Length: 309
Ligand SMILES: [Zn+2]
Image 1 (cartoon, rainbow, N blue to C red):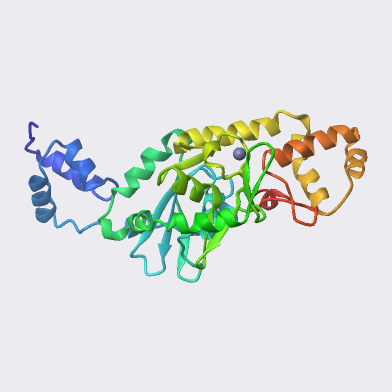
Image 2 (image 1 turned 90 degrees about the horizontal axis):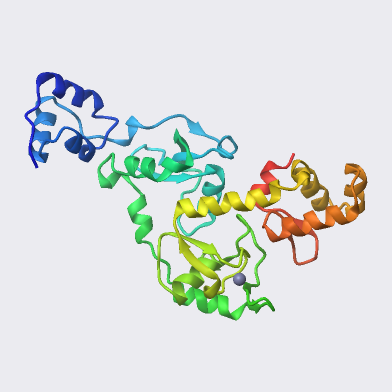
């Protein structure tokens, strides 16, 4: 690679961009060697970057509902950060707190680093993941924490129901986004992910349900997918619900069912037929925004209940 000797002007520009770009980005942008870069840092007395440069005000979970972008989970001493991206940050963080990792609210808080469009999520995430020294991030640690999925799958097998449609459902009630979770050694895991790891291979990527039944953990019904493909799928699913004119009443219908109101009560209130309500309720059940619990009463996912009045 041809290397530049930087002019005074270029050097000053580099200094002004120092805190907002990663070292690698700057080396690339100014076409200089790493040694040149280190020398400039020394000469200009630039401090090693730490996460304080991107810290912002603490956010409450509800402020992040429906927000698409990059978030950080920071320890109170502001020395370490977990960086993630999601189309709905609140939902993702709720999943984290139920996932194998986690941070308790007493020693960590959440910040919104940047709002961005879905298309640039992965780019912006990797930008922030390259900004600091590796020791500042939790991310690596968590990627390495691979659960003992064979042992966990043995537990799933013991409580597995095989449906006529071929779906496998673990006995637990679905939660957190409509998935079924299994507890193991004090931590909980999504049953479909564990089944995929145990029967196919381990991956950090999203796992998609080909059968569109989020409760299912039949490995033949699962495929690895990218985050952006998964987002597409999420929107497809929302579209199915949105296509109905009843979508504007979705909160009302959910709330009524959870309050144990009858379908004819809902139909009368909305001035429509009972069968129209029933069809939409079937759709809501199928799309995972509504569930029946063990005793036959309707319950909603944490995501859906958060959007109910
Ligand atoms: Zn299935």
